[in-house]
Length: 272
Image (cartoon, rainbow, N blue to C red; front, side, top):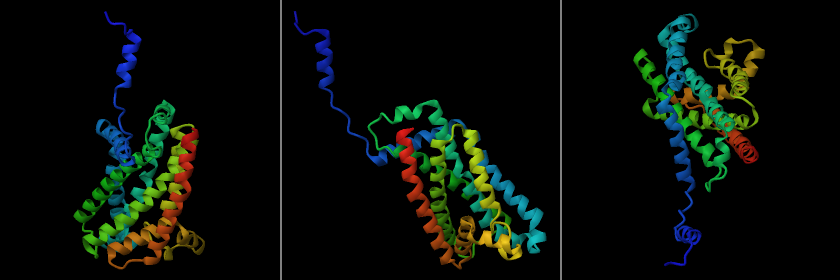
């Protein structure tokens, strides 16, 4: 009869197990991005904002105001599509913050913080899924624009460059909402705060009309609006006349937002 007790047998079995290797930063980010993608799979209604709203905005502004603003809808479409593309992507940057705020309220983050993983992977993984949302919205907008008659003078290369600078800016703005998601007590308060910021900077810009047609005081604000720099950069790439000054400003602003809000988000995340 063996003298090994049940407790000793269990301890021996556990001590002989090979401890799994710690997941790499990339692996952890991909795992959490996969988790966020599953939400889209099982709740596809959340894609409504990034599929239907761009279509509604483009059709409404082109055919309701195009003739009055530019003389013809075809001419206005060439001008307004890059602007509405920017507006659409910038507006949906808030969704990751809202989803993270929901996770915090449910207590899921308490479990995540105990895992032996790279700490930022939870947030970076969510932001990686945001890039998928941005690409879906951009693709829908560009395909519809092509059907309606939009043609990028710079061709496919110009479109890719425009999307690249747009995604960089959107990624940097997303960090603002992740920071606020750690501070706000509810998703409603976060959504209200984000809309108070996003509505002025998107609508009071050069998205729909040229700043030269505005009153001087308003033109001055539009001229320093980060979204206006982004619209100028995207339009320039698509038209084949790159606005390098706008590209430089967008790059500086984007890097500045990441440098400020990414560490701040992680600081709040560790102490939430």
